[in-house]
Amino acid sequence: MTDIWTEALRGLQPRLGRETYDLWLRPLELVAADEARVRLRAPSQFMKEWFENHYLAAVLDEMRTRVEELPTIEIEVVVDAGTEAAPVQAAPAQAPPPASPSPAPAPAGLADRYRFDTFITGASNELAASAAAAVAEEPGQRFNPLLLYGGVGLGKTHLLHAVGHAIHENHPQLRVVYLSAERFMNEFISAVRYNQFDEFRQRYREDCDVLLIDDIQFIAGRDRTMDEFFHVFNALYEAGKQIMVTADRTPSDMQGMEERLTSRLNWGLVADVKAPDLETRVAILRQKAEQDRIAIPDDVCVHLATLVRSNVRELEGALVRVATFASLKGKPITEAFVREVLGETAEAERRNAPITVEAVQKAVAQYFSVRIADLKGQRRHKGIARPRMIAMYLSRELTGASFPEIGLRFGGKDHSTVINACRRMSSIQEDDPELRATIHQLRAQLIARP
Ligand code: ADP
Ligand code: MG
Image (cartoon, rainbow, N blue to C red; front, side, top):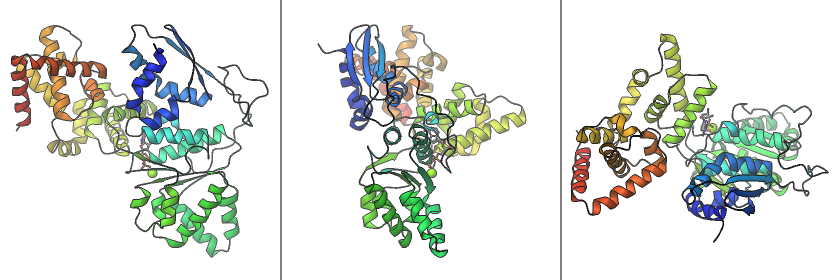
């Protein structure tokens, strides 16, 4: 029999995807495993923490499906004697990194709040965030160049800054240069005009170990700037220096971008950032509310995250608007209040909205004469448990919501509860004509809603 760790990883791999798996789970070396304890070795403190913050919960969930009692997981950090910064004596596994005397100021242009620890990850941005973290960990080694692309307000700039901060902190000897592509163009034009081309070249080709450029699509169609960027790219790349850029689309979709640049931007890793799902939106709202000390109950957070789906910037804007009105009017933030403030937008989004989990809950509650609160509650009484499972099953079938999202909307239940409910309902239906008829009727009613 293989050990619990290896089994859990095997179970998890398809869900995480190959790249994430290779990036973050594979480097963890198994030292020993028994029922009570799994001991692992991580190649760095950073890898250890990243694993603990992002993947440990999933591994434990996976283990929970196999064993009654979870083992404790201990991770030690190997200190790599090969790196230049290695201490003379190996540090004990849990020792904190040595405090640097007086930290140099952060590279120019980086917003203090855009950091990895304020970035919420979910399925929509997992690959981008993992790749960014890998670049921050080992600049120039893993993905070079790294290009993140996606629609507005989805966190690309946030990740770019986070990489800048992290490299600055973990590799203080490296010179990080951050700027927007627009700024790059303006500086280039002015360098040419005022005969300061040598300084320009020095700054971006010589005095730079990590180049971070935001919104690279901006230079598409601007021939001389593209030409200059091409040379900067080559100089840095050949010197093994890290290049990371963001864009609003893939290189191949950038009209007017020179072919030789497009192909270079495709050399490393191109990762997309998508619109976040409900769970991630809720997590972002919670964090933002905490940061800004906004008192908003959890269910209102879920409600707000349901109303604003398009992007994170709008989501943050909506929260700030609601909080501002609430404090002006001296009212608490409730669902009704959120609807009042965001009324218009919300109404428009709802009109052409598909069937919602709420609509399913309402229909099921009516049909069985139970309260919606009971469907969301914990009671296991058959008269409630059965309708609850039916509601979960129909939510899954009709709304396109994910298992975790459905769990969230049923009073914060674990996604495994939802999966079990759906499985049971589909198997029981097979030899229970009455249940089949009930589900059929509810389905028809929901699809034909006015
Ligand atoms: P983009 O560059 O993709 O247009 P930004 O990075 O400027 O988007 O993000 C817009 C706002 O949303 C920023 O305030 C950013 O901090 C926030 N944001 C976006 N995604 C996340 C996330 N996953 N976690 C926390 N904040 C986020
Ligand atoms: Mg941006």
